[in-house]
Length: 413
Picture 1 (cartoon, rainbow, N blue to C red):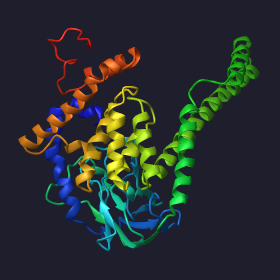
Picture 2 (cartoon, rainbow, N blue to C red; picture 1 turned 30 degrees about the vertical axis):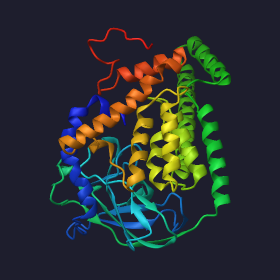
Picture 3 (cartoon, one colour; picture 1 turned 90 degrees about the vertical axis):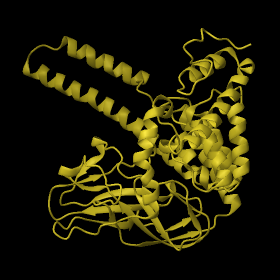
């Protein structure tokens, strides 16, 4: 489970009370239509005109917000690392399952709020994050969203009984067809190769030798420039050049990060055994605190896997592997893998510690059993691996021999 769970266990129990209604709301939405006075509205459209998909494809539709009057703001946040607030509803009722809850009333990210002016605001929504398509067929999709708000009510909490600002869209029809197994296997190989290559070649802020040489040359010119008007113009030109180099570097980093996330999303929701093996590999391969992680994306795709027993076996093996350093993402995936053996919907991290005292105690005992499995492997680990693993154990909120105050530098036998 996520690192925030371990450092804020007591807060999660409180947060769970505020969020638990979101799961119930996912089954019984209370939508509100278009605001007739302002003309503020939301409609659902095909993303890039696409309405035909194959099972395992990322299925994305666009929320399009419009208004005839000012004063409205749209939350455009689509980060893959936060819970989903948009509620997806499908007809017919079979051929798909709800794999994750939708949560309303989440905190606002100021950088993703966009004023709604005369031009529409378009927000892509990835349906796979909360829905798993299991059978080919035609589906009618609607979304209920709270993304459209008035600027003076941005910080207001959503009512637990109803969502006064929620709006339900029109219906958009999509068609899903089966994918050939050999085609999927080839796709898994291609996407896995891309993810492996981009991991080792991810751009950094380090300049190339050519860029360093150019900057040294520019710096030398600026140091020798006098105060004449011509020299000032030259200095301004050199500063602009430096800015361009930095901007191009940041753009290259962003482009590759976006491409890596896109490849991860394409792999995450594929259902076959080859995809299961790849998903578990990339979840286990992510390092704790690593930038631009793809493990959480792969974890979102665990409910899409057909072979749930293979998936659990691989997750358990990765968790106990003494050649890997354990991570919170891997343990969270393991917990969800166990859940998926018995049900189709996973428990969101933000309510995992909620519920009754008995449920909380059961979750704690399961968690500690998994920690004990890791402790038992310490003698089999290399020195560097053991050091990192003990550091992981020390940071946990759940008690163990490495994070107890009375323990003084415990060492494995």
